[in-house]
Image (cartoon, rainbow, N blue to C red; front, side, top):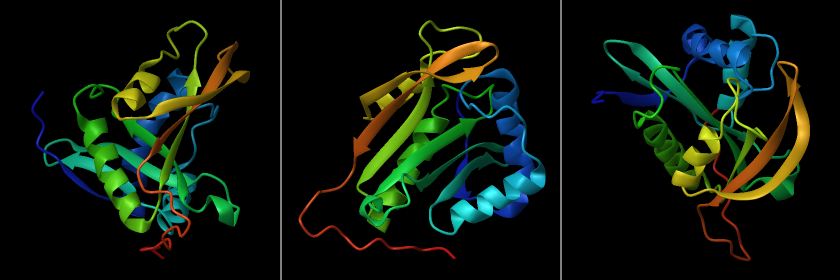
Length: 188
């Protein structure tokens, strides 16, 4: 699939389009363990809060508009974790496996490294046995992006009448020295 696209910072004005993509995942998958679709106002607030510290990117084309989004957020609030970020990505359900996720994550990683982030972490729902709500596709995507599995929590997420596992994957993108870089906040 040959899609001409641009990657740019998300704005609060994108909330409705991003929520339209996310709604599918809330209602039909265990990719997110969220039960209720947030309101546009709640989603706008999420974009605003995350964007104050981290990149929040959309991928779009002129014909279809926004095709997906990815963002980083705090891995943990304590100061010792400031060089780590948790990654999230959601694509239009009909455009998965078209290279858009790779493009978004590659740009997000570049921006995070420029900020001084060294570790990328991904928290991923994971099935004992793949089903109609959750497969191992996200784990496979992250492996292709250079992430490695670092842990699994068993039967910790309950959705659609079934228990799902959660795995953590990580990717180290910077040098871990005795003098880590100062984190550069480019927002807010």
